[in-house]
Image 1 (tube, rainbow, N blue to C red):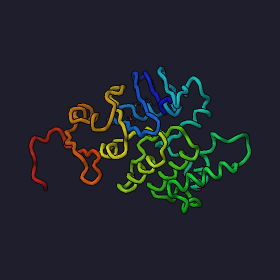
Image 2 (cartoon, rainbow, N blue to C red):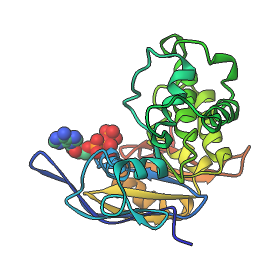
Image 3 (tube, rainbow, N blue to C red):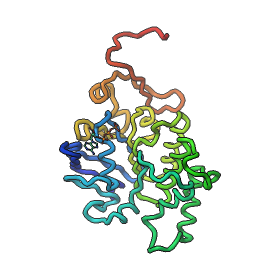
Image 4 (cartoon, protein in one colour):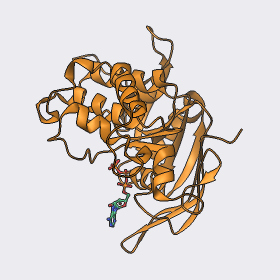
Length: 265
Ligand SMILES: Nc1ncnc2c1ncn2[C@@H]1O[C@H](COP(=O)(O)OP(=O)(O)OP(=O)(O)O)[C@@H](O)[C@H]1O
């Protein structure tokens, strides 16, 4: 079976800049893959090329074996790939209306929602625990609740691939864990841009690291996020050990200027 997502040789120009110059990324079926890299390294641009928001100059983006730029219409691509982006869309709608929008790639003609659409909405709303919020305006929700609504909008289309661009930004610690836990629990193959190394360690099967417009390292979190790589790519020192509660990789970072063990303040 093909990988859920194959990105090969992806080149993206924005304005007069080459933002990506031949980036490769693979998401095996069912895996949650983290995309890491410093500010401006091109994470959003890569993800935008995957969900067809920015057209690449060159390269391949294939979801479940189909090239989303050459073989699929925009609508067919949207049925395969759903995104949770930093541009959340029309949040003045109710929660139910926003989630229903996620069925648009499946709609036929001008008819209203089908029974299948309604059951998909009920399932998606239940799966992220927002059934009690369906009649609320999205503008009245907390940041954590809103991100769950956007995840439900993505899941309601029953996509083969979820694309999430820094979905935990501005969320409190509990909401960050809730959201990424829900992504994992959905069982959907996913690629997620993250800044937090500990969240990557806790929720990702594999990570890819972007620098200089290319993916410079990929693989299991502990194999990739070594002290040498973290120093080179992120410019910080790191101590990596096992989280005492979960056993997952834990990253204790410090500025490179740290030269000795300081007493706790
Ligand atoms: N429309 C645009 N025109 C020109 N340059 C752009 C445009 N959009 C983004 N860029 C540039 O492309 C580079 C990559 O941006 P991108 O948003 O993909 O990075 P990122 O890794 O997601 O960053 P961050 O972690 O800060 O969100 C940046 O240098 C940015 O300034």
